[in-house]
Length: 498
Ligand SMILES: [Zn+2]
Image 1: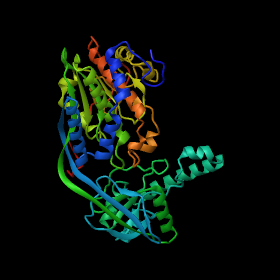
Image 2: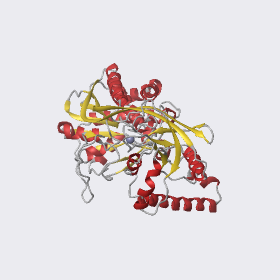
Image 3: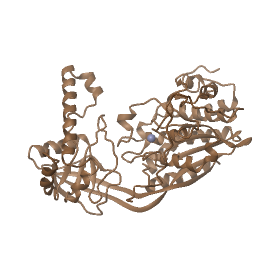
């Protein structure tokens, strides 16, 4: 028995489990995979060439490990490719600004637009707004509020006088409410206002979707159809806002390129290690493959993706002839509504109805610390039995809740739970996921915690191994007296005008 710390310390009497642990500790491929996917291919927005490139990369990677894999088409999406975003202030002084076009922002070709920045005014009502609207012609319009601070609350909590912190929060709440009213008084919504502005001749839309951490913004979809919509960092957005407010008439130049690529097919990447005794019963590993594209989708859900790829590599190497068929689903378009996994559930009743268990991971880079029974009565028995084979150093950190509540959304396991199939979430420690990496411009390689990922790859591999080996097929009775979510149909054609 080795006496050292970390994931390698525990030894199992089971040679498969021992081999999995030794391999992952001494020969992990996670860093190499992360570099290839995050640095080489980058973000994986549905309908982009990079998503397809990632699908093809995963298939090639599985083939190099002698694992069967394919891309399975499930739908079609608006094809779009992000190009460069250059945003500079040219007056009253010169400064390159930190910002980027939102996903699906219209391209400007080779054009650069230089124009004054104005702030959405606080008008009395929609009539007054219509009267003001001609003023936007040729201007960049700021439609997000000025944040009172770029410091996260935890930083105020630590250093501010209590009265300062309380005052800032009260001011911020009042400003947020006032800004919501400012938008609604125009007669438009956050979605329709940008379109009204571009139709009135605005040169572009400036937004700031601060993610409540230092230097971090969430980057979602543009609603404009003609002119660019860009997110500008809180620091630079605030500067422009204050300059405009004080009458300095800031002027900026924007050059954003993007390409419309028509209608493109969208895929799930599915890999398989065929079962030797019960090939028609299935154990599944699961993680969505797509991402938003402000960063590189490293922790949402690059880390879940790599965890499951690495688990498959470990299984193929040390458990090449599983009793049951082991599948992995790398889903497309989770971010727009679990579409890839919902489509798979609709298209593969033969798999879903013979599912032994599915393990999904999708909440960042952290080690798994929570597992619930998703409301299934018998989950306690079989999940506990399988977890018992996991080394103490990994399993002792996991809090289990049985029978738990059935997940109605959040990630792809819910697509399976919705039809009564045993889909489970390997839920991670958060590592400031919500504010710093989830859907942000900072979701990048440097945030990955590889030791935690190794822990998760070992866990996923062992749980799949135990589920495959179990002499019994799982039975999944729904706990009575709790609300079960309904199945939702996949959107098979997205981002396109009807
Ligand atoms: Zn995700």
